[in-house]
Amino acid sequence: MANAGSKSSRGRVRAQRLETRVTAEQKTLIERAAALQGRTVTDFVLTSVQDAARRAIEKYQQLELSVRDSEAFVEALLNPKPVNDRLRDTIRRYRETTGA
Image: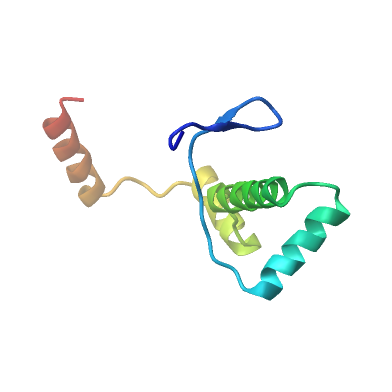
């Protein structure tokens, strides 16, 4: 059955395939790490890749400000600059365009 998925240990059907080529050294390293943890290579690789993907997404989603940036942000919130003609014109055009 070419399109049949296999069940993972958690009962979810795995219907997608992800392939990669590795060097002999990389394969040996991965196999050793999986064996040390008492896991299959597939389980070790999937768990490792998922963890790395989550970390990458979390890092991308976090907004990091320097102390100077944080102070400038708070200052702008506490003491906003007065609305100038350019901003007033932009707001007017936005409202005309969107009907807001």
